[in-house]
Image 1: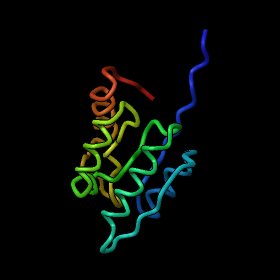
Image 2 (image 1 turned 30 degrees about the vertical axis):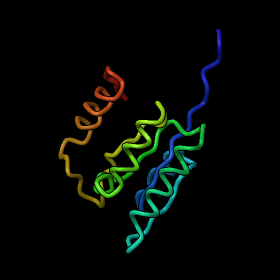
Image 3 (image 1 turned 90 degrees about the horizontal axis):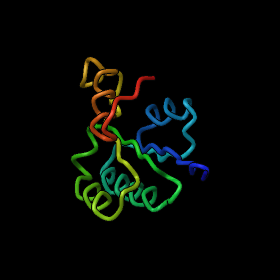
Image 4 (image 1 turned 120 degrees about the horizontal axis):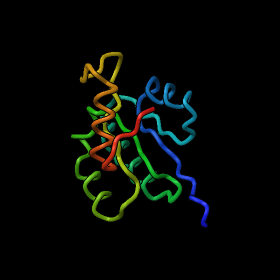
Length: 117
């Protein structure tokens, strides 16, 4: 029986978002501050982290996805991993009121079955 490989999770976000996720044990992160070059910095971070073979999941804030759609599409087309999770609520108010239900449905969509935590 082979040992499963370790897969890292990475986050790209602002200081607050990355700090919260890092408290949960995520060690790979990129902090992006709002500014003129924010989308270029997010694209560069996505490319860098997607080229890291140890990264299996990259999380980005939901409102940043539209600005980097071309990069997300090219990452999805070139290989199976990493999975990009574009559902980190921004700020202190989530777009989705039932966050647990949202992530449960999102997980089912990604992997095909429910995961209860």
